[in-house]
Amino acid sequence: MTGNGRLDAREVRRDFPIFENNPGLVFLDSGASAQKPRQVIDAVAEFYRRDYANIHRGVYRLSARSTELYEAARETVRRFLNAPDAREIVFVRNATEAINLVAAAWGATFLRSGDEILITELEHHANIVPWQMLRDRLGCRLVVAPIDETGGLDLAALEARIGPRTRLIAVTHLANAIGTLVPVESIARLARKAGAKLLVDGSQAAPRLPVDVQAIGCDFYVFTGHKTYGPTGAGVLWARRELLESMPPYQTGGDMILEVTFEKTTFQEPPARFEAGTPDIAAVVGLARALEYIESLGRSAVLAHEEALTGYGVDRLSSMPGVRLVGAGQRRLAILSFEVEGIHPHDLATVLDRNGVAVRAGHHCAQPLMEKLGLAATTRASLGVYNDESDIDALGAAIRDAQRMFG
Amino acid sequence: MDLRDLYQDIILDHGRHPRNFGKLEHPSHFAHGHNPLCGDKITVYLTVAGDRIEDVKFEGRGCAISTASSSLMTEVLKGKTIADANQLFRSFHAKVTGGAAPPLSEALEEDADRLDPLTGVKAYPVRVKCATLPWHAVQAALEEGAVGKTVKTE
Image (cartoon, rainbow over all chains, first blue to last red; front, side, top):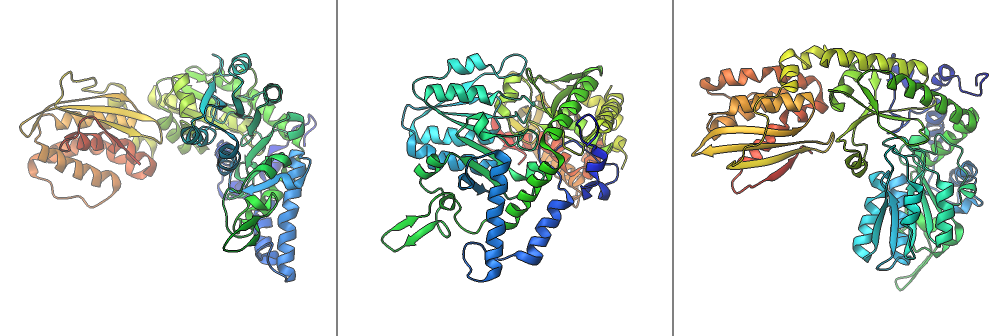
């Protein structure tokens, strides 16, 4: 950490072998997936080398050790989210699966025809499509709260869309396509007042903000491990214990039962009830290590770092002729979505890549939002703990290179 | 590979100032091409009389590669028979994907050569679809019984 409470990105970068193996790489696509520190890579490799066996099954000591590591990861996630109880942590593959689990197990059980699910225009497809499917199956209504002209969530407009049939509000914590930070605490108060449940998609927020599910006051919080510097294949659903207890299984099979006869099956208590079959044990162990890594950097230092760098990026890009940042409302964090006049995002991304700058170009799995903004696609630079001002400067220089070519 | 092998002057020129850009009011055939990866959408319109393409235009929004490819495609397809168009597509497809080039009748060689500036995409696998999108749309438009069909690149 440096004196001003920020990270020393050059030091952090030394933890990430990808940069050693790809000299000159300017990686600005952590919003799609973050790179992995050697602490995580080593934890996964060491787990396979020393401790691996299937969990919750074996009588032998190795299986007990593997189970202990897997369950210790649950406690690490609990601490990371400040959840009251580790039994409220369900391991899934990713945030998409977590949302599908809530839709299938909670939604299909407790929602009725005519009930309303409220989402926002900022959502990723993963927080739209599962609710559409549920709507079509149950005859619910899917209500969409609009953004304002600055790209921020219009809280008053959201409140106006809450009605007596609103049963669930599902919102992103940090909008993946344009970087809008959503006031989820305020939305939680509105949800509670209306007697609705609140699901927060923390995929972009978890790696960047100190997350406290009790302080937020939500009912479900989901995030994916691979964006929090962990391996692919492990994600998290947190839900209040009484909700999990009221929910039927999502998938069924091994490891989630108490007793099976051919007549009847009794299911395990949560979280085991929702973890059918052998999970990606090593990815869960790696995820815990990744969360510890973020904690070791200091979560407020990570936030301060990304905030400062976001400010630098906004200043830098908005001072460039022909570059237009796509609005993110009052508060933007870590995600800079922009257009360059006369250059298609795909062409721009190709030129940036040849300059060693990795960004995302496209609709960012948020087509309804792009439609609302009147854009087919944007170019998106997203930040991680290993980025610093030199990366933003490299982005700026590469944009200028593209402008020279296409100008 | 140098970027200018991909973005040759002729590509930049056709990307900025596409030829045959616009809508045909009464096309005999048309189809939409959609690249879900980047959101590019184009529509190709054809007027076919007998087996000959009398006119062809396109409209939509896309990157420099797909716009230039559409533009160059309309230039070479105008006046060709459907069989010629199919030959040119197969030859173009082979060039941009690095596949084996099928035999091409001598009369079409010059037209096929005019598409060569696009072969730079071969070195950029994710961009090959940008170049082939308009051609796939033409194929879809000419398919028997197809009216306003949409083809996707994936």
